[in-house]
Image (cartoon, rainbow, N blue to C red; front, side):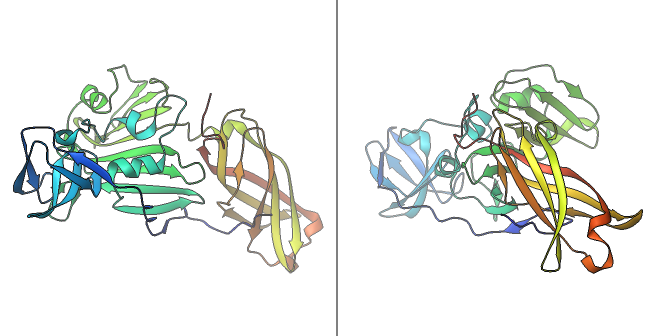
Length: 338
């Protein structure tokens, strides 16, 4: 049985970046007549490489490769000049995967490099962030039109769930942003002073949303893309039973949860619970999230601890109400949605 924890705020905990496992050496060869070597991605030119030169790849950061030059030391070279196809960190097919499939965290880190930072937002759900401008203002991914991107990852399946881009105050338009994302121009399902939104418009993505800058129709502050419907749990997960019990002087509320979805899994349930004793309010609490996961069609018990003195009321006479207030929509164990 998994025990709950009391919380009124989202779980946000800094955790160390997982070390990258050792992999066999990758050798690359310069395929153009000559290419500049730089001190950092898009940084200062420090030398040149010529056709046929080979080296061992030490790190890849999307369109840039780092290696140790015999004379210049650690340098960066443009990846397309060593046989790696040019890609965009804003192409959401590459970030989140195509329809029915998911991009893995391991493949993202092999492509984008080590994240700038990482935080845990719920049990087994983390956000990894890549800052495009770090320290001296170096553009880590070349001239990409964003300040940073944050990717939500399910640590059980390794799947990327959503991506959020901080654009700062970029002067652009919805059709240009769709092009940046690798999507065709389309009519939004909602447009107002704050957002431009496309729900279920593009196969493989539940929602694409552009955030406007204080109602300015020409400037945008961010982009958010959800692979799955983050609110699907509201219609698919039901509480079929609830009861309170005492264990060693502590009060626990146990909710039986059923996942009615045949395709989606849901994790980290948070609940709001109110308890009364003969019309007298004992209290109300928002508890969780729990380290609990509901696979498609699965039933499970969510056990929440309640911070209350059980001697102050008669447990047999209490009335209790409970509702779920938050869950994460995640892929099933197979990692594939038909």
